[in-house]
Amino acid sequence: MKQTPPNLAKLIGLDLITVGRLPLFIMVLLFASAMGVVFTTHHTRQAIFEKDQALSERERLDNEWRNLILEETALAEHSRVQAVAMQELEMTRPNANTEVVISSQ
Image 1 (cartoon, one colour):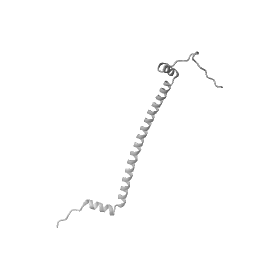
Image 2 (spheres, helix red, strand yellow):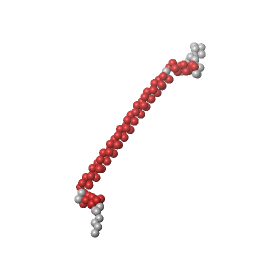
Image 3 (tube, helix red, strand yellow):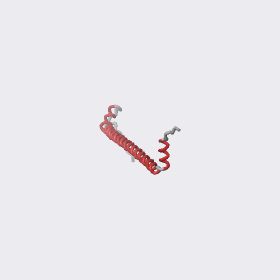
Image 4 (cartoon, helix red, strand yellow):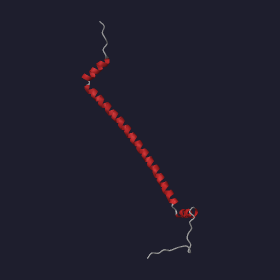
């Protein structure tokens, strides 16, 4: 009679289910813990990267804001406004003969 070799995977599975429940349970917990560490590390690194991007964007916007303030100050300067009024709008200062004073009593 010919004897078939035992199925090794079946023997290991039966051994884990019957005798090795505690080591199997500990192995599953260890794997779950390791995966938790991997996911937590990934999410932490992703959050740090997003924070760095947000800080860079904030710095860029802050620089742009300062430049806009400087530009606004330069454009609102009295001598520039007076020069634009004279050149583009052809405005002149009134002289004493054309000046009208209105007073309310």
